[in-house]
Structure formats: structure tokens, C-alpha cells
Length: 379
Ligand SMILES: *Cc1c(COP(=O)(O)O)cnc(C)c1O
Image 1 (cartoon, rainbow, N blue to C red):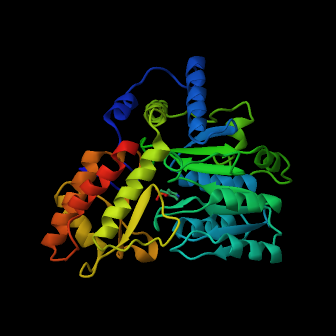
Image 2: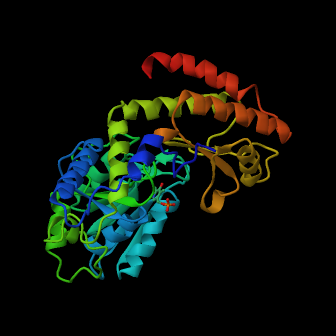
Image 3: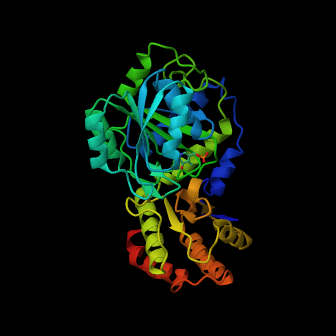
């Protein structure tokens, strides 16, 4: 099956081969610890920083929950800035750990509006922390986190950013963007197997943790154990194999001009789709890692299209939340990206719509080939 999903993405065979290695006991071998630290250093290159970064074993969601558990104290007010499914999800973690979640809700089809947020903060800025999502994978939006985090910083509010589907695809400069806590995962643009969450902390974020009055109410989710303790870098047995796979995936990503590659494939995909009459869900701030397309007239539910494509050996994503059956999504993420994969995608979409008796304007395959020619020099 060719995987062009919005995550988990396809994985290169060399990455999977590395995963089959079993070379040592990671708990006892000091050389393994050195290797592990070198993988952390590679990860930092993706986000252009020297700031403290570490990995947590688990799906990326574990880093979202752990960030609230480690940074927030009971009773604190947290601003939940959201314009999509994942952004709204922070509320649950905040309330579970006894915080007060205050919502700033944006339009789900547009990037967070900075001047609205400015107005909001002028009226109310009594927050220790604010949460947000970099790339809202369900909507296909990438928020301008540099402007948002810098604005928050001017009020002394620490930012927690879910960039699970941004890091490795979108340009990120952790320090320049004024981010305090950056969270990511292995299975999106990095194209390693699912199971590793990545965390990066600013000095201010570490200070907030060290000045807590109450203890962090968890062992596994306690950030301190990963960077500031005798237990660091891993307070439990690490998955040796997953880290080999991650190392190889990072090598492959860093070998490419990965920001440019994602941007170009995103532009080509959007232009191909729009030239055939499709309407994109995001009206602005369109993501470079995922494109969300509104189902054309005549397609009653997304599953019908996905099922047809699976029979052709192709997997794409449907929507999430309220738009689950109303859109389809293409992940131009990490190892999904190649000329052959995208040619196959657009050819299969043409065939699928024909078989489903859905009329589209022209041919996606032809549009893709034409658009690709325009960008060829730049890829
Ligand atoms: C994929 C993703 C996550 C992790 O969620 P899963 O659905 O469990 O993979 C978290 N945040 C964002 C923005 C994501 O795209």
C-alpha cells in the first residue's frame, strides 16, 4: 500500500532495517548513552536550536499531556488558543491536572488572527501559560507561531506549542520564534515509526518547572527526569531499536532541503487540485505538510473515496472531528514525498472520481504534471 496519509507517514526501508538492530543493553552501555545524546543533537538541528531537547517513549500525545503536567500547577489559568481539533484538546489535559482552561477560539478555516488575539490579551492577560498548535493537521492550517509566541512573551506568558505535524516539514527556529515548550512526534514529517515524542524547553520553561511550589503529579510525565536528574537522559529502559530508526530518519531528512521540499509539494498539490475545481478547507495559512480538500459534489462521505483508493493500493486520510466524512486529506509529509507517489496519487484520484461518477474539471494527473514542470528547477 502506498501511504500518502496525514500521518503516520510511510517509512523508508533503510529506517525499518535500522529498527531491526539489537546491539547492546541501553541501560548499561555508556556508549549507547552517548549515541542517544547524539540523536538528540540531530533532532535539535531540525528546529535550529541548542536548547534542552529530549525524547519520551510514547505516542506524541504523551508530550502534550506531560507538558501540562510538568509546567502547570493546580489552579493556574491557561489560555487555550485554538482553531482546530488538536488545539481544543489541550483543555482536557489542563482540567485533568486541576488548571483553569480559558479559550481563545479562532476560525477553523483560517490561521489564528493576531489582531483579535492582541485585543483579547489587552483585556485579559493573567495567564501563566498558553497552548497552541503549529500545524492543525485536520484543517490543513499552519499558524504563525512566531508572531503568536512573541506576542505572548511580551505579556510574560509561556507558550506550549504542539508542532507534531510541523517539525521536519515547516521552518522552525525555536529561539527566534520565542517558543518555550515545543512538542513533536516521530510519525509525521520525520517519518520514523510511531512511538517517540520530542520535547524542547526554553530557559524560562525550565525555570517555571524548577520554581514549582507543588510537586509534579506524575513519574512518567515528569519532564525533569529527562534532563535534570540522575535518571536522565531516560528514566526507564529506552527502546533501543526505535532510536536507531529515528537516527536514520533524521539523517535522511537533514540530507535534504526539507523545508523547501515540503513547501513545493504543498504548492503543487494545491494548484493541481484547485485547477480541477476542488475547494480547499483552509482559506489562508495553508499548511506545507498537509492539504485538506472539501469533498466534491456527489461524494456523500469520505469513506467511499478512501475505500476506492485502498482497492487501488493507496491510503489517504479522511477528516477528523466534525469534518470526518466531509473532507479528504493528503499528507505531503516526509517520506510520503516523491514524484512517483504523487503521480500515482493524482492518477488514482482521477480514476476513482470517474468510477464514482463524480465530475471534475479536467485531469488531476495532467495538472500535476504541468505544475511539477513549473517547479522542477526548485526541487
Ligand atoms: C498527529 C498529531 C498528534 C498526535 O495525534 P495522533 O492522532 O495520536 O497521531 C498531535 N497533534 C497534532 C497536531 C497532530 O497532527
